[in-house]
Image (cartoon, rainbow, N blue to C red; front, side, top):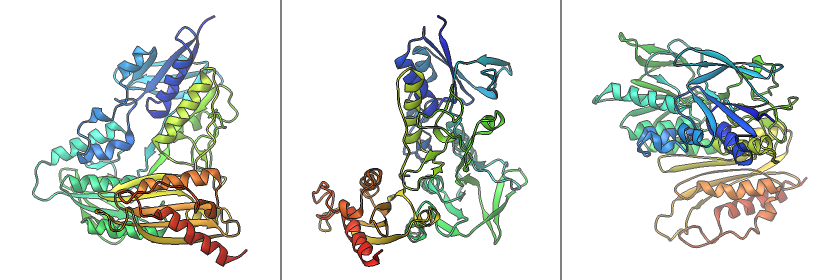
Length: 462
């Protein structure tokens, strides 16, 4: 029998994880694998780009997990700088163009994996395409930004404006600060880090100000102004303008699903492809999708949402590869766990914010505590704040947010496990967490927050 052909669109986390897992399960004589990647790089850590730009990661290649040559050695036909421009679902084929030669051709498939990722949000405003304005979604984007910074030379005063104050925005603000720029962050929202409640976002704002990063909330960008050389010169908002030698877009990302939409594949309310538990595209037996181009089930809210994270993308790829290769795997959903940092400030969240709970009709209570990440008497003890949200009647944990210094953020993993298990805050108070003065007070801050939330639940009644 002739080998089946698997075609993979997208050569990063989800796509190449799927291809690699399928190859482990099926040899080349049983499964031919052809993968298309439109960029210059494959199998890399996009989450590491801010740390490469900042200089914390020394070299671009440190972010590459596996080279195209290594994939080809494993009998995966990875075609770089080749973009899929059309899907013919009834005909089971894809149309691709080689970006170097301009050659266009069709490739048939028996099974298809769509892993087209996400694209940075780039508002249709005047000047957004000017030299010096950069998104940072891919290694190509990161390289373009570094080339742009090098072109500025050793100016006495260098100014960076970061548009947006989500994960990408605060990480890129840190990167620009470390590179010696005067940094202004323009944030359309009430506080930075809209993935947190505003009271916790305020802690991030205060810390950024303390680091020398100017954060302007409620600032809607209206235009990018350029100089005589055509390069960015200022960023205009509805209130004033801010001088800029470089602009970094940290507004967020959207699922890259134009190709799938044009082919008639189903997308959800957030623009991502819809899949079942096996990551198979709904209504299409031979098509799977994973990574930043899909929507996933929020296990706490019971709704789909779009979350662009490498952790999920790699898991999706493993599940898809197992199913394509003749095995079995499922991806049940997420609880929305994410961590970040700006300099020595750590930021973490999991589960629902207050407005998320209200949106799905949950009645809830909250409790916020201040503690330290180590025993208060131990050298290096620093403040951390934990906010906990629980269902009002049952005490079921709904969400946790943490802002603190070194050793704070990864405590959110305890809450992520509790959310996945459906634990109540009262059950959490009995968790047997590790203790030693260098790592925690005798009552870990997460347990202190759980105890305080139990009191709030009891006080609220039914």
